[in-house]
Amino acid sequence: MAKMNPFRIDVPQADLDDLRERLARTRWPDELPGTGWSYGVPSGYARELADYWRTAYDWRAHEAALNEFPQFTTEIDGQNIHFLHVRSPEPDALPLILTHGWPGSIAEFMKVIGPLTDPRAHGGDPADAFHVVAPSLPGFGFSGPTRETGWSPSRVARAWAELMSRLGYDRYGAQGGDTGSVVSPEVGRVAPGNVVGVHVNGALGFPTFQPGEADGMTETELARLALYTDHDRSGYAMIQSTRPQTLAFGLHDSPAGQLAWIAEKFKEWTDPAHDLPEQAVDRDQLLTDVSIYWFTGTAASSARLYKEGAAEWGRANEKSGVPTGVAVFPGDAAIRRFAERENNVIHWSEFDRGGHFAAMEAPDLLIADVRAFFRLVR
Image 1 (spheres, one colour):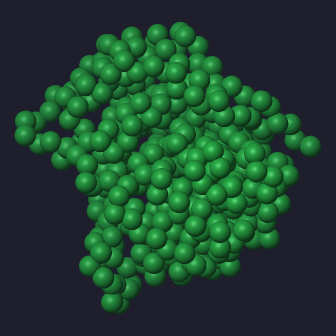
Image 2 (image 1 turned 30 degrees about the vertical axis):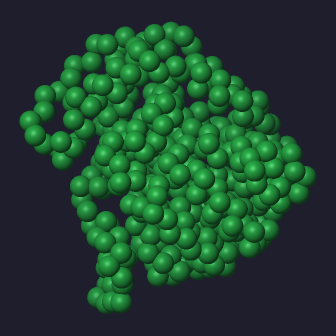
């Protein structure tokens, strides 16, 4: 039996001191007046957020909050894998593996783990309880860095199936957003006899851009289709899927650079009803996420996921027979006809509040939808 090692987050004080010193010495770039966010993160915004990170944000408090969840590491396929494993007090709880994406981390799930594992204590039905397993993606946070090439989403899915097997779970669900919405359905393909259902938030399936593909689409669907060709939104992915190592010199050496690179995605992908990231997500939770990247030095290895996965983007898969649920939040590019090409979609929800980081922005809606979907397949 592969060894499971108990794990606690314990960032050395010297690393905290170094972060504050680097932030204080940041060489800030100039910017053009009156351009707002159209050229990227405004220097004024980045300076204010970095100053808060340096002087007011309390990493130790959030480190302690994360350490309230039982954590472990194990080696799978030659890679160290870190994961939260929070068992429900309900004996009949369904195991559920949660997968984050980039630029996310296990910090995304801090508001959903309690209600998912112990609904009775959060005003819910104990019949909806889950045993939650939340791994850090290979190369991300405390699962990083990766030590070799080849860690594509499909390889991650095989590792997740192995992790659940090692934990003794032979019947479980999979849920994820962003990269998790790619990995989770793949877990269902890898272990169809074990996965009772897959739930994703975000896009599932890609357009082929063949003639007639958009015929009969609603205005909402056409707007989502346009997101796939919005190069302003995809520039980061083009860099990370081609030259992640070059990018990493700036992100790994400059906390202000790492902060701006991630904060821009929170501005771009959170609920479009909000003007600034901290209006959509808790500022401290956002900085906990950024801090995990910084303290673990995983700017390079997390970006490599895009390089490793580029060959699988848009690749046709065999249709999965695993029941699948989709939650669509504002700003997501999910279109049902694309999702149904390769997935057995039995549940589809659309929300007018929240965004790409649903577990942080609208945890109540995500929790309710996960519960509703898994009631169909438990």
